[in-house]
Structures are given as structure tokens and as C-alpha cells.
Amino acid sequence: MTTDDELLLLENQLCFAMVTAARNVVAVYRPILEPLGLTHPQYLVMLALWEREPRALNDLAAELSLEPASASPLVKRLEKDGLVQRTRSAADERRLEIGLTDAGRALRERAVDVPRAVMAEVGADISSVIALREALKPFAGAARP
Image 1 (cartoon, rainbow, N blue to C red):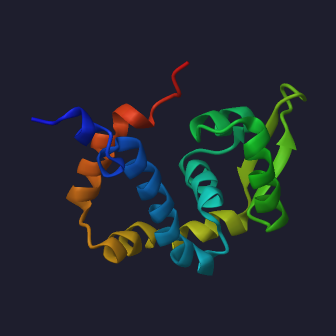
Image 2 (tube, rainbow, N blue to C red):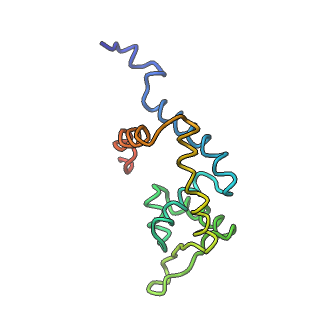
Image 3 (tube, rainbow, N blue to C red):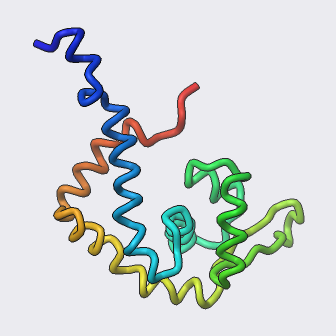
């Protein structure tokens, strides 16, 4: 049985474990992504675009659980690096669409080993990664009011 005092121990807090894990996961990715010229947030943008492009900036931001104002600098940096291009939609000029350049598409071939490198770094196999990802789903959805 867990006492009230045990419930309030820092080491027993789910929020602390998740924040620490998130920080450490980004630290694991950093040296793996560095040769690709990507930061972790930029990698997430590229993953989304490798799945489907072009995408409206607002749609891309929503999928990544970001505010458009936070996604925009990421996209601008990727554009500066020659990996994406921003264009106005022909159907609606208010809509900014983000698409890959040839260099952005080619980068996917170099990025294909990133998940394996991360698993090797933390000593995990695909089944443990899947189990962890599934366990996190209740916490990884849209923010609650």
C-alpha cells in the first residue's frame, strides 16, 4: 500500500519521470541528427513532410502539437537550409503550403537509420519502443483545458 508521503516523493511523480525522459530522449537524438544538419524539432517537421506533402503550415503545426507561431521559425530555417519550400496555395492565397525540395527528399535516405541508431543508443528493441509508445498514448494526445 502506498502512503500519502510516498505519493508525494519526487521520484514517484509521473510528471517528473516524463519531463526527465523527454529531455534525455532529445539528448540521445542530438548527436544522431547532427550529421543530418537537423535539430530534434526540425526532424519532426521533416518526418511529417516525408509522410505527406505539401501541407499547410497550420495543418503541419497541428499534427506536431505546435502553435503555428512556433512551427513557422522551424519551417523558415529548413527553407534557409534548402530542405523545404514555402508557397502560397493557388486555391487560397492565404494558405501557406510547405513542401520538400529535392534535397529534403534526398535527406530521407540518410535519415532512415535514425530510429535504429536511437534504439541502439538506449539498448531498446522495436517491441519495447512500441510498448513504450503505446503506454504514452494517453498522455501524448491533445492538451486538455
